Length: 353
Image (cartoon, rainbow, N blue to C red; front, side, top):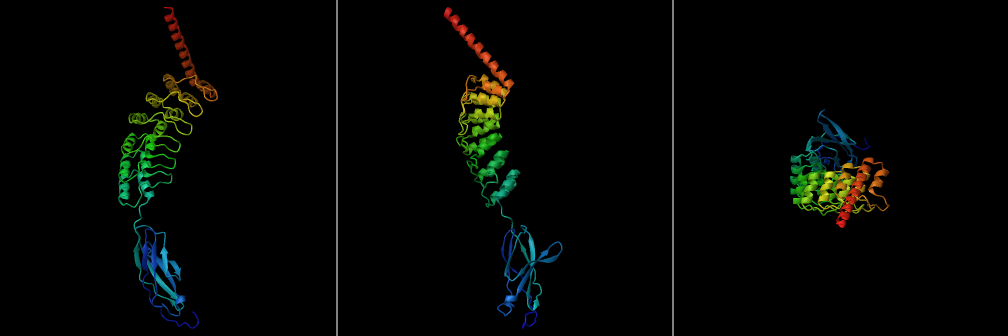
């Protein structure tokens, strides 16, 4: 005890006063009127204790000379009990009466929206959006909006709900892809059709200059590509990198011969060259897509075309030991020679007459 301090009983303090309360924090404030402005005010120390609801015992969570403490790391919508004790040079006070405080509901967040969308939880998504606390176009860690995620996963009902609640149909991610491109690649025709009805454009390009048709070609979904063509989507647009058309992408990625035939029948140029002078036939040969090579040959692919290094599809196939492709191209070459010879013979016969 400090010299000259008379021992006396310390009055029981009032319970802490509750300040700001959130879903994970509680602010507690206090003052001790019995010692306020007295000569020992600077020696007054406060201790705050929190009850352990399971053990029904209290433990100290703060001790010091401040008149405020924020209790952190709490659970949402949970009730907590606190009490206060005062200590001065004369001794300790009795504990105050406990005070009960309940934290608030956790505010809805973009992370919760994305979690609900990923789980295809329609009710949870509706509850979150109806609360008006979350921006519907909030991006996840991968830079995708909730609409992009739903379009990728094929959750048609959620796509509608998100659009009805303000999701931007033409919003792009960091690579420039929008929900329509993602749905086309994933093969969800119903979502593709819905997004088109809500204003999604075939003309939009990503950062590589690819359109939705490029991405549909990569996905290789026949029904999607067919409907896109019927809906007026262009089939022979080049990207800005390798200058590949959707047909070239089919030859490089999926190798789907039915999709390639569909594109060619819709006007795709089977002999169009890319930045390096490669044709779809060369790309298909390099990737060993035998059935596709056969289709391209049947659709008029020119086996005599050379790239900028003077190499044709046959030379490329041979260099990579694609012997089945080599056989297909050589057989086509024989047929072309035979056809030309037959045509030449017919002309000679006509002249002799």
